[in-house]
View (tube, rainbow, N blue to C red):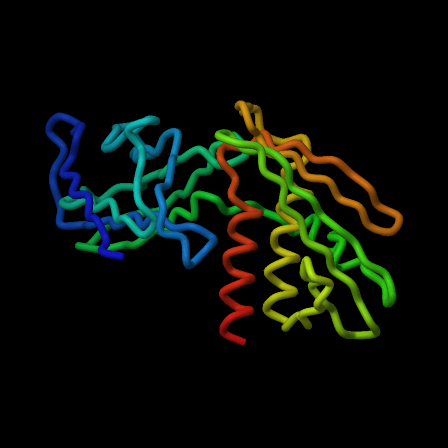
Length: 238
C-alpha cells in the first residue's frame, strides 16, 4: 500500500523559539502486519516538556490515518518532548524523548497495542491439557449481528484448530502464539475501557474449569479480526 506522508512544520510555535534541524517521524502502525485499513486515534499531540509548548494536536474525527502513515515534523528545536495519544482502553499513552544536534528520530505508535504480560499464562490455550478442548465465541456487529467462533483441542504436545467440518488443523508454533496473543488481549480488556456502541462485541469462553463472558468496551479493538487474519495467512503459507 502506498504510504501517505503528513508534513507538519510547527502548527503552533513558541514565540522567539530558535529553529534547529531536528526531525521527527511518527509512524502509525497496527499489531496486525497485514492490516491496511483506517486507524482512528481519538487524539494525538506533541509537546515540549519544559514549557509545554504545543507543536501538534489532532482530535477525532480529524485524527484518522491509514496504517503505516507517517507524520513528519521538521526543523524542531533542541528540546525534550512528550508524544501522547489515547490507547484502546481509554488510557493516555505517553512517550518521552529528546532531540538535539540535527537528529532525525523515528517513533512508532502501535495504536492497538495492549500490555498482556499479566494474562499470557492464563489464556485457555496456555492452560489446555491433553484430550481437552475449548471454544471461544464472538457475537455482535454494527450493521448486522454476527457470530464467529473457534475451537482448539490438544493431543499430547500437538494442538489442533477444529474446522466447521470437524477437520483438525495442526497448529504451528506461530499459530499458537497468534491465538495466545489474542486470548491474552481478550482477558486484559475485561472490565477495561469506557466506550460503548450499538453492536459492541461480546465474547464467550467455554474451557475446562474456566467459563467467562467478556464485553468489549474498548476504542475499536480488532483483536478477533487480527487473530483470524494473521492465522489464516499463516495457515495458507505453512
